[in-house]
Length: 195
Image (tube, rainbow, N blue to C red):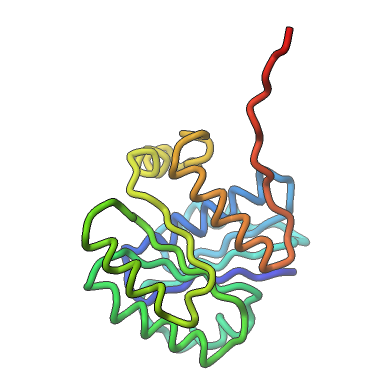
């Protein structure tokens, strides 16, 4: 079984949303998957997201540093670290990266959640591009579709299939899956009727 850990010590970065999007991606493909929510946000829902003989486990970690974080990341095949492109996120984000890289050689996927066209985001991205460990970066734009999907407890891919946020989420899922050696959803091209 492959394990994907979604980790960041700061709350509000989108860990639970990202973990759920990864889980939903595997479910859409028919890949047996389990979602373990250790942060307590979706405690009731997560109990129904565990299956026998899962091929992949997605672990949604708490938004705080815990004693078992090093154990969680050392057993993971891929680590996903979400971050918001704001100055307040840099310190906890870099602390998380430091802990992760000290405890595992698993590939990292950095998900910059809530990107936009403004200067603050551009400065954050310029800072991130200079980091040697930031090889696999995915930008997820600010999007009403993500908010709607959360409200409906669905994947953004189900809510706004052709939107920028859905495309970014598919890119994230594809990148994580490739690094973990798991199947991934192919982009469906629009069918053109020639008749």
